[in-house]
Image (cartoon, rainbow, N blue to C red):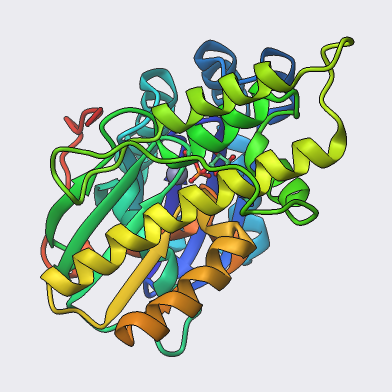
Length: 334
Ligand code: KG4
Ligand code: ZN
């Protein structure tokens, strides 16, 4: 069965065709990022206006690249949340309209769960249930225990900033561009991760996260280090990046290890934009294997960021289990 996936939860407009939930034949991603750069963050109105303009084109391209026709589609799967309200409405409206006009079933899927599903795409040996999973994206940081695609327990989540958001904000504070995550990772390669002592704040519940404190610590450290021209020397910037990155990654690993211990799981499945960070990937592999013999799963790099293939794939699995949505499907902001 061919599933058309639609993903518009943030600044991307993505459409994909996935065969039998596992193999994607196309995965078109159109980003409005260049339009947000000068503001240093995503402007929701700009994002959803562009999504309205390009969504039809994204779906057309996905069909063309997959070499199939509209009437070959057996299911439409769409992100219904969480995400930006206007952006989600554009994707949902398009998916509902297409479902009605083609008379094919519709299913709404959760954006965070779909990030984890990226590990099941084009993968000959996907993880087997049950497992602990960690989503690290621009908008969320969450730990789950997954017994199946529809049996998901939330173990913890961020109490303030998301992990990717903290990377972006820290980068902005020290004058790097937007989005800061990938730039910060690059700078960190030439820095000393042990140079500056940063901390992530404690949380009342051990499996929750808090990243707003470390962002403020970067602000104060940077302020105290400005030279007369209010510019930081590049080696100091590199040290801030390396120390920040190490502290955040150590926290993610400590909490993931604890979750695996509590749930007696020897598998950790990771997804979301920050999972593209190479330092994070290497450290997770190294420490989880060494400290608890836990096997880590990461999606292919190109599937870490928002994309519709993961949405189509998860929708297919849920549909096979008997789930579907009506045309009354609404945005699920949380
Ligand atoms: O999952 P995603 O594409 O969108 C959301 O659902 O939010 O994640 C985007 C986030 C941004 O905050 C971006 O800075 C971060 O992922 N990111 C990274 C890296 N690549 C993307 N953060 C750290 N290191 C990276 N290499
Ligand atoms: Zn995402």
